[in-house]
Length: 260
Image 1 (cartoon, rainbow, N blue to C red):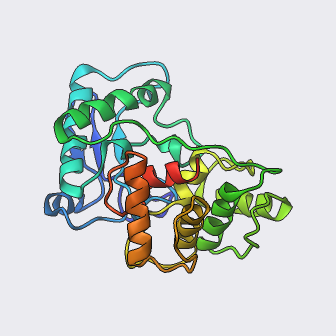
Image 2: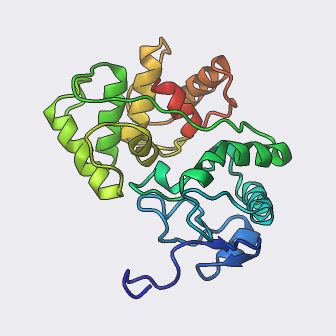
Image 3: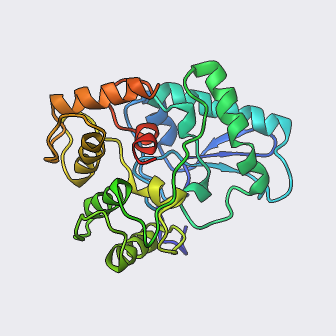
């Protein structure tokens, strides 16, 4: 805590190898029980204001979780899903966002099973989100989405659908700022850090990315950055056509299908 300048531990909760769950950052448990509050943390750069951080005692680079530890992890994830409305496919590992070996190869490999076990209780889609790769030399609508999202996060590059030097530099700067691997390639970590849920009432460059993707598929909507009823209707229709939960909200699952 002292070395990092934190006011408390970085994560919200910790699970010991013996399966004991403890609160990390102060008031995280009260916020969770409330279900509508959230304590800002310091467990994952770029995600601390929106993602619950669970620390698992151990490194798990080559050793699996003990049975009691894994059972407690499932129990906590189920409760988190129920209280905060988190879909099972939104259970991630630290390395999905930051350049780190955390949570270790063994534990990371268990995430599909964890998503499935949580979904068995709360329902929903347990399939992890899959992202495409976008890199220098690419062109097209996916690159436009990258450019819109970079501008959403404060850049000001031209949205021309061409992945040139300016776009690559902007990607590297963004990756550096959020703690992702700095390689200029838009992959898993970069997409996960760049997208944010968008719904009716939202506005900005990310909404333009959604609208541009939908427009390129023949949906009759304006690319104006305003998430109104027409955009919501188009999103809902797109979700239904792609067998995604049709709620009109562009979450990680919908983003990932839009940019494929």
